Image 1 (cartoon, rainbow, N blue to C red):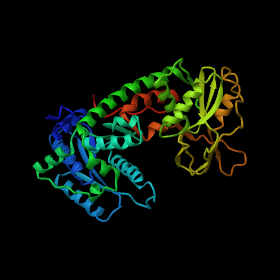
Image 2 (image 1 turned 90 degrees about the vertical axis):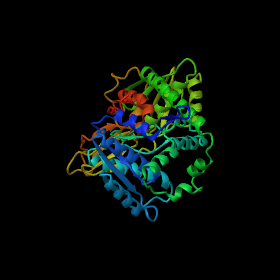
Image 3 (image 1 turned 180 degrees about the horizontal axis):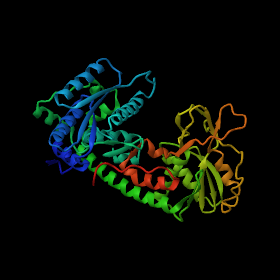
Image 4 (image 1 turned 120 degrees about the vertical axis):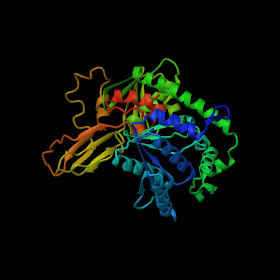
Length: 439
């Protein structure tokens, strides 16, 4: 049953729609903290499994070890899962915890542990219990930071690390309706005292939230606009951007201001600079002024160099602060946010460093005669070069090098899938897997 002008729905209806879109042949993990939201989702999914609508259900509880009693709470969740005949795993965040940025690091650790645990059991997607109240809280927090694209809220499907899906079936459900479902079912849950602590921004927003229905309507409108924008941004990238060499991207400057063009350029800068986040609005405004200036020139932004030649912008990684790393046999690493590099040898250590000026355009002049003189040479200097440690002859090692698209490869919300797919085709990066939820 839908409520409040069809802006929210009942927990049962939301999960029915979700499992129908997922299909009965899929296995699913669920992240269960023990709180009311995740316990409600657990029981709803168990009901679906018992009706044959899910092939397999795996519950995962992450114990961050950040407060007393977390271990006991994880074991309580394990006991509840046993009563429901659900396989359950406790994944613990071990090692030293950071002194700053703890909440963000805990979030990253949580998703990493959930992915590792689920994929070890052959499961490639997890359901989380984020609900409509979480959605409004998230958007209000982002709004205080002027996060324009973030005002579309959380996506129902997010691809994590290119191979694991985070799914949110309850984004259209109110928290009060989840509590009502639990009470009617006679289920217990664990109340986290931090959820009432006003030292945390999310708690303050939750307790002060008033115009819920208006907020939800606006979020849905923003999400629809973001999907429309994404299609236009992808079109601009497909039509106006070329990559004559993997180290260099060139973009046509339109005859008049275009919002989609500037957004496309922001994605291009993030990719070429190896940055997960897009450049801010003020920086993009300065770049737009530079592009509109009559004369050519050069500027740096977001670890990139931008050169203007006529009605074309050329973008490449700035040859500054490019790392040098050591790869032991069999080791792989993300290098400079732009490439994943693996040392395939069994006994040789490899040094990965920026290519530098050596070689520049030697042997390439005939293939790149249309480029301004010296442009390719400048772009090539920030490419990775691999050498074997201790080899005086400078033996060349055929390292496995894969292009990384930094703004998409960690978390890719379904809103941006069209842009990501277009960029993967443009830069020769691996394809992104399709969302598991059927339309």
